Image 1 (cartoon, rainbow, N blue to C red):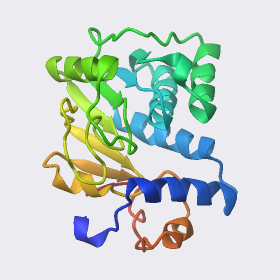
Image 2 (image 1 turned 90 degrees about the vertical axis):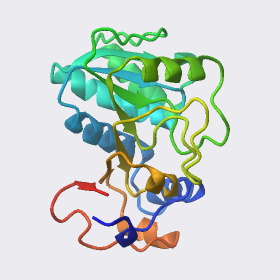
Image 3 (image 1 turned 60 degrees about the horizontal axis):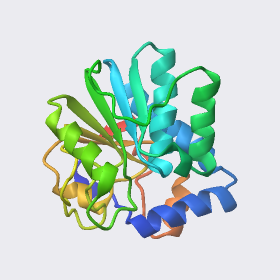
Image 4 (image 1 turned 135 degrees about the vertical axis):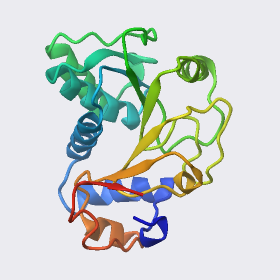
Length: 221
């Protein structure tokens, strides 16, 4: 689908849509996170290392890791700082724990064929630093295929500025609607339906074609 046929969501609109979806339409963030994880996991066909940050993007990654574990395609899952996870993301961590899946706090990529990047989502507005930067650099130096969740970590979702460092994703699975910064990428971007009512998008000024997902729940941009 042509990118001109779809509206985009800024990071501010993403926050507004999340709130509207829960408060006006009764669909909790946990459901959206679960749907996001399901869509990402369905796309991953090889053994994967899921690499998570500390926000809701990490929660999407943890949800994906749970499905990949069930399907025998999870190599490892790690999180920059588990103690900083809150709300739905923390509950996704707990769900993995009940299954006996270890979430490491050191980067583990060796046994994976593909890396799922769930370090940063739409909220990033400055260059990554510390462990975040070190993990992004290691991902880029791994030589493995990388699938980014929503946006490649280190990319400004609004402007398309690739901070240093920025994950060099081979494919991005963006959630709900594209983000403006993704339009500058040359690598494939797929738009995944995560259950947000189109009425919620309309409420923030984004008119979505009614047949967007008529042919499937994953649409190439």
